[in-house]
Length: 328
Image (cartoon, rainbow, N blue to C red; front, side):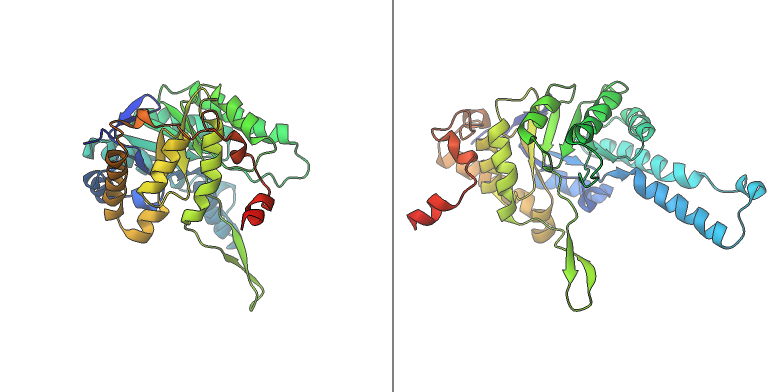
């Protein structure tokens, strides 16, 4: 029987499958069920500072609209509205860590410099195994250069790693002017892992009512191509571990990412679509593939199809369809 264990951010995982940060990991019974199904680790649903600020601001706006707010009344405002969600999240992390034996990762997304460092310091005391920084920024500000956008990520990393001893992973999107160079430089910081890639909310149009409408919130198997390409390109060229996210919907998708060079994979949409039992199914598919192909350990084939090792490195950089259609 194949040994499915792998290492990620210095942690030994029993297999490469991590349940990614989402509504799937926001309750203790759910996390316990994922452990029972074979998940190697879970990333708890992100704590979003922006949501906390927005909820607090909404309360203040309602008070102001009603004519209730004036200097004397502010001392009666319940500023615990800001603290309570954070305290609840910290308690949940502590309870989650105590309830399962698999690694538990926290995840935060902040909009203020102090938020990143304050949350990171307090999360370390919960006993979780690692911290994932859920950083995403759409470079839509015409007044900011690519260098300025990139610097935000380095500032966050430097601030957070200075205040916590937890292994830190950075989850990023692929909107970048020079993505390969960006990932390489990120890997040279104190981060222990980079997650490729964050999945963004994408807008759509309702053409009948001329309104904005959300596109599908779930990924499809076809979306694996973007992360697969960049895991393969960056494997062997970075100073930290790589975790593949988006588009991994079965065990063969997991095999592909491992062949590209990933240390782990994060799965969400496939579980939403197929249920928690799909975790067991994916792990079994990986095990069967390894047995069939004569691999005793993941290290025997990890990165075998990466750009630096494959016989056809140009395949990962080809962006034209001409050859494809010529061969049809």
